[in-house]
Amino acid sequence: MGEQYGSRSGPILAAIGAAAGLGNIWRFAYLAGENGGAFLLVNLLIALAFGAPLVVAELALGERGAADAVTAFEVLALHSVWRHADWLGVVGAGLILSYLGCGTVR
Image 1 (cartoon, rainbow, N blue to C red):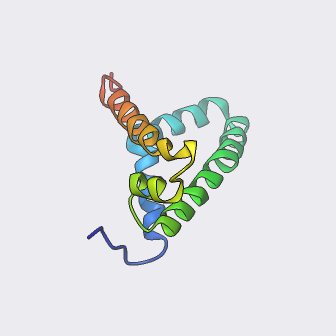
Image 2 (cartoon, rainbow, N blue to C red; image 1 turned 90 degrees about the vertical axis):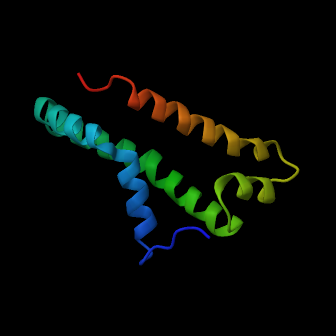
């Protein structure tokens, strides 16, 4: 059985926390101090334009598939080219984690 969250906002907050990371939080404060309001505005617009639709799509896919990402894609897109998108997500997450873990702290 998978993990259960105590509220509906639990999975969303967990995803945001995993995506942000501590290094990004420190860098964000530095860049905001250097560039001021323009940086904050652009950052917010990009987050809303790309992040919000992706979070909604992922939540809908998980709700509809009632399984993990790989199984949900296989079930919901059985005869579609998108059935292979599940492994792209897994490989992409692995590449991002390998990049973040290699020498990002100076």
